[in-house]
Length: 155
Ligand SMILES: CC(C)(COP(=O)(O)OP(=O)(O)OC[C@H]1O[C@@H](n2cnc3c(N)ncnc32)[C@H](O)[C@@H]1OP(=O)(O)O)[C@@H](O)C(=O)NCCC(=O)NCCS
Image (cartoon, rainbow, N blue to C red; front, side):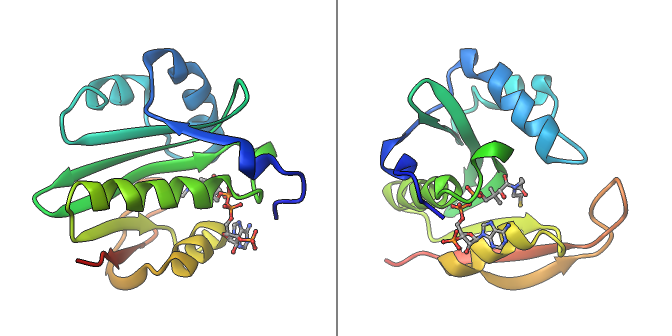
């Protein structure tokens, strides 16, 4: 819930290399199988990748990395600093992604999510993502399935 006006102060910008320390801290704290710093360094220079950080003042409070091929975008990684959750940062990053996909003229956004990730699933469903498939035994750490969700974009 946005109860302190923070959401109005969120600024979203592309990653810069100096943001990687803060991103890696959130990545490691947020995921059982985090991306490595090297993976980030390898992909952020690709032409078909969009990278975003959300800032409130000088503090990086969230990030997202997407990739697009043909007319489809895939959300690869997305997290909000644990102390800053439930204030609208994630929703702002999702809206920014949809707007980026619109500017790129894409038709669909796809993502994978763990069935028990209620926070993310609720946010995605609220945004209009629909369940379109299941990847069996997808996650390396515990072999659980991944839900495949898609948002169809207008126009
Ligand atoms: C998923 C995540 C990015 C959401 O970020 P956030 O900034 O807390 O999300 P928001 O504050 O914008 O929430 C928007 C809406 O999503 C839903 N939501 C968010 N967190 C929720 C939770 N813990 N339980 C239920 N619904 C939740 C709510 O509908 C919320 O709106 P409301 O606060 O007005 O009720 C954050 O929980 C996170 O970083 N999780 C760990 C990493 C992760 O799972 N990433 C996604 C991988 S697929």
